[in-house]
Amino acid sequence: MEVWYSSTRNGKIRVRASEAILKGLSEDGGLFVPDRIPELEKSFQELAGMSYQETAYEVMKLYLTDFTKEELEGCIASAYDSKFDTEEIAPLVQADGAYFLELFHGSTIAFKDMALSILPHLMITSAKKNKVKNEIVILTATSGDTGKAALAGFAGVEGTKIIVFYPKNGVSPIQERQMVTQKEENTYVVGIRGNFDDAQTGVKKIFADKELEKRMDEKGYQFSSANSINIGRLVPQIVYYVYAYARLLKKGGIREGDKINVVVPTGNFGNILAAFYAKNMGVPIGRLICASNENKVLYDFFHTGEYDRNREFVLTSSPSMDILISSNLERLIYRIAGNDPEKTADFMKALTGEGRYGITREMREQLGDFYGGYASEEETAETIRILQEKAGYIVDPHTAVAACVYRKYVEETGDHTLSVIASTASPFKFTRSVMNAVAGGADSTDTNAADVGKYDAMTDFELADELASLSGKPMPGAVREIRTAPVVHDRVCGKDEMRRTVEEFLGL
Ligand SMILES: *Cc1c(COP(=O)(O)O)cnc(C)c1O
Image 1: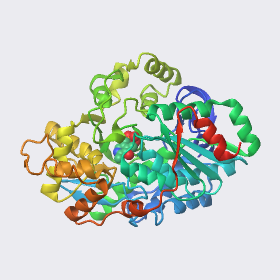
Image 2: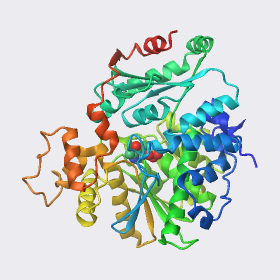
Image 3: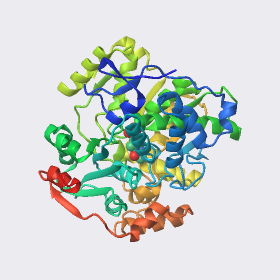
Image 4: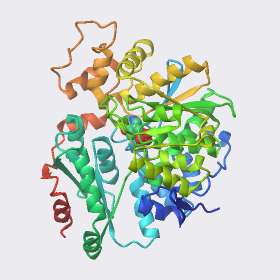
């Protein structure tokens, strides 16, 4: 049965999956949502015998119903290949009483690879299906991680180009190196003299420029976005929750039908929304534990029913979760509002206007499966240290936020249901925070004074060596390579020159 997509803000819109992927966002500013959440067709016994790629097909075919079997299998095979450093793609590792679902084995060692390695293939397939003749130009502003994951995903994919703008002095040295060493002809990376907001505003302006759109079309180009609200990024994320459950069954950690809890370090609410969809497809998930850092808008939302972005923005050691507007929450709001686009549009209008909205009691009652928690910076560092001491397992700060919230959840509720913690980045991506935490950072109580500040004089790469010897794990290829790779992108422009730079790249 075909699944159609409508907008969270306009019920009259009805498009197929491939059109939703090409568009990204609906014209009314709403997000595309499936008209129903399909049920899994295979039993978990059957799924337990499948590879990641086979599981991906079983899940994604239920949502992308206008893709043929060959098309979808082709996309999956191109995405989940040797770019990942393990055949399991998303391995489960048991440590300190929980299972860590490692989502960082792709080319940029962070979980965004799970979706961004397949999105380019879904997009060019969608373009072909919809008789789009133009080449797709992906335009992205990044504060670091997404830019690299998108570059790696689109690099060398025929029929696409990707242009990434980042704040020249606003990303970490490793993040910058990752981007400026990106190979392949179809990639363009530009530092701008300005901050992330300037980059984002500039990109939005270029997207909205009708005159430019017309000239692009004449030259055979059109823009698209690799934004995290694209349904082509959400659907691939549902897969690993189905896979994790099937794997646990295979390993004998659970029996069929047993419930598990999932814990997700959350920023834009994409990853945990995928877990929510998996639950509604029939994966026996009990609680969905939403972990925030000190930017705890979502914690407050789950505790009070009020979403309020009017607060100070905190820079933390888990930067990919430093977000005050969790865009994907709109899809959950739509659902608990009874799939009502008018109500959803009103809430989102209030969010844009006053920066806040409160949901009704009836809506709150439907959030019982969610639990919101948060971890302070001190707690996050302490969690990294304790996990290393107790279990010899080293996690990155994002994953540590989740592990900390999980511990608090068990203490508060006494619920010992087997839990899967989404592990969203390799510790090698955040060597400085991780090594400082392990050494007993400045804020922990039993600090060994000699260790404090001992890493200040080392570069991030030297710290990666330290981490490799401490963890006994080899340094991931992604870090090793960029250390010596030549810089191929050295372009810098003013924030008012972004459009001209794009025109130049495309020969307009
Ligand atoms: C993007 C990101 C997150 C947050 O995921 P959302 O889907 O935005 O909630 C968490 N951890 C890492 C490492 C990320 O890159």
